[in-house]
Length: 408
Image (cartoon, rainbow, N blue to C red; front, side, top):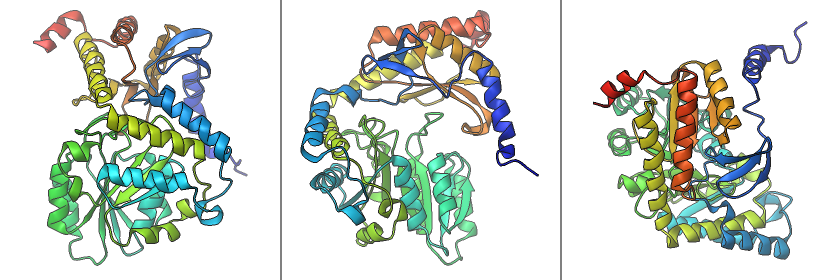
């Protein structure tokens, strides 16, 4: 008889191989968080370069104070969903803040960004509809497709021509067509060609949902993400996002101008049957959003830091993504070698993310760095230096002569 967990043998073996490299990259314990950019790990002071804390707001004093006051005023949690236990005033205030920020009429706040995608996508697309999703979509998007009942069609990553081709094949099929893409992709850090996707959407009379999890607070003149940077704010039908990146907390949202939006509050199961965000998180996110709007210099500092890390690693000879952004991923071909390199970095006081298949597209192994506005130039230069040292030690870099030729 097959054991209950026998089907996970390949996962267990792969995880075991990684742990044999010297440590468990998926079980890191931060013994003490010293600041936005440093923590104690394995007794060592370690630079955090893998936290997605893009604006460095986890220790913003006003956001911390707002969270503390909310705990004192409202307690530690809501102990139920908004459908069952009611909405606190902060929930509705945050939804209004976000709607105003994006220039939209409607907003729903979810307990996680994962649930925002899970709820929005599975509810919007019905049994006679079509979900057309980018092949490199986040796990939450794929899981939303599994939860729902629509027909799912994948198109080639960031390829408007392939999207157009696949929509043309179902042009005469009844049902709504909903395109789902991300703004900045979480693994490779590349950006969606939103202008081209909008043109395809209009051509076929489809809807477009953009997940701005990694681009909110990072791109656009006011931080509204890639849709603002590309000037397509009013052409995107639905926007999802998270508070666990630039807002320094946890939670998610769905925003739209659709006139029947509010029916989702009594139709979306991941919204209806999950306990709502605690007042402390609501309060800290409202304050962090206010900081984002009041301090555009945070985004400018973030992009200066992106240049420091990206340009430094590129000059060292590492293979990186083609587009700059707060996600800077070093591409490797061997998962085990990537695990060895990750361990070597941690032992030298640098924490990054190890990303491996099947989470990564095309079987690529990544040393995934994320940049923070609070990083100092010296910290990022040190990260470049340590990565280069490890790269040379384990043969991750081309020979110097080849590096010079590539640079020319």
